[in-house]
Amino acid sequence: MGLFYRVFGRGDEVPSAEQLCQQVGVVLHPSLPAEQNGWYRLELGLGPGGTLTLERYTAEDDGFRAELHIWAAYLETCDYSPHHTALMEWVIQSRQLLILRKPIDCPDEARAERCCRDLCQYLAALCEGIYQIDEVGFHDATGQLLVAEY
Image (tube, rainbow, N blue to C red; front, side, top):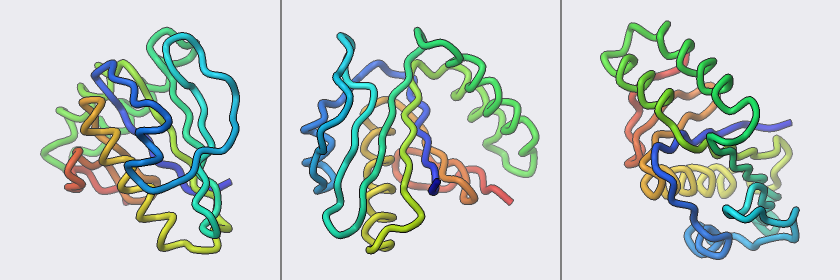
């Protein structure tokens, strides 16, 4: 188990696996076959920095709406931030959810962290999204922290 990053996208844009790899300088490892609407799981190699797993869920997937409602309910409790209501609505309106997992035993922790943040910002910008990092909080596509997790 590792640290999780989540991108909540309101848009339907799906980057190709090759675009993702080029964007953050990682290598695509063989993975599960893609569905007709694009990939749904990728393994991205960081070389000696470890392997990241990226999964993509869409509004058509079972449990998708339930997952969004959990995050929206969490944001509803974050009334210490002036952004919590807007983010709650954003999460509910999401059409896709991308979950990035960074293993806890990355040999190059700094590189893995940098790649994860770069990937989240790229995906958030591409998918009209926001992103969340466990134990850090919710960010806009530029990386600005909007709701801190305490």
